[in-house]
Image (cartoon, rainbow, N blue to C red):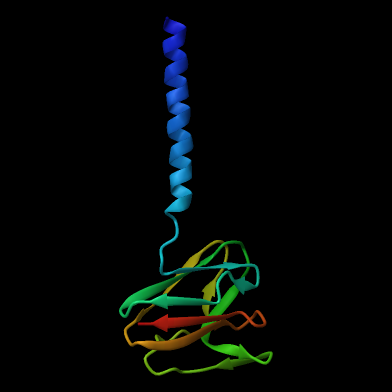
Amino acid sequence: MKQGLIVLVVLGLISVLIIGCGESGTTSSSPNTVHTQGASFVQSSITLSKGSMLTIVDDDATFHLIANGSWENGVPTPTSESGAPRVNNMQLSNNGSIQIGPFNTAGTYHLYCTIHHDMNLTVQVQ
C-alpha cells in the first residue's frame, strides 16, 4: 500500500511539471508581439489598437537594427511617418526583445531591419 501511494505521488508531481511547462510556452506571446527568426520577421504585418505598444522578440541570436522605413526594390528606404513613434536603429539580438510605441495615431506605419535585405514589417493602427 505504501508503494502504491508513493507511485501516485510521483506520478502527480510529474503531471504537474509537464502541465506547468506546457502552459509557459503558450502564454509567452501577446497579441501585440512580432517575432524574428534569422533574417526575417515571422509575420510581415500586425494590427494594433491606438495607444498600444509593439513588442519585437528575437527568437535566436541574430543581430538586428530596427528603424522607421522599409526595403523597396532591394534599397533600404528610411522614412519619417507622421504619427509613428520614432525608431532609430533600435538594437535587437541574443533572444532579447524591444518595445516600440505607443502607437497613438491610426494609420499604416513601416519598420524594417537596416541590416537584413527585405526584412519589412507593416504596422496597422486602428
